[in-house]
Image (cartoon, rainbow, N blue to C red; front, side):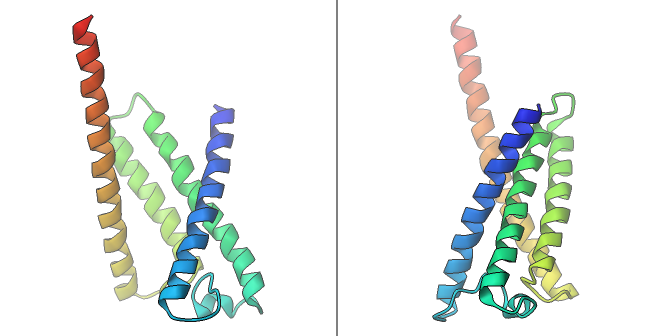
Length: 150
């Protein structure tokens, strides 16, 4: 189990860094600037340089990846129902990811922005959950078909 946790931590950190960097690149381009912005200008202003801000943002991106990677281990607990796993996974990822988003100053910390963030998070979560449930049902159907042939 410790090996699995280590592997999920490393792959989550690498994935988070990769996704975070490329999303920051995309948003920098979409904002029409000639500089790389790892996060909001308010975030960058805390660090004295874009390089320092990028290093800190990289650590936050890695933490975000680790949150999603390690939280997926919740689905390995066999004695829990899929509903319990999903609700717990949602709560863990929402609380930890929201905290990291606030620390990254992705939006001003007020009700309207946080409500918008929450709605977007829920939409993305439900979308990914729906895709994963369909894949799981397909896999189960294939296994049941193979078992029926035996």
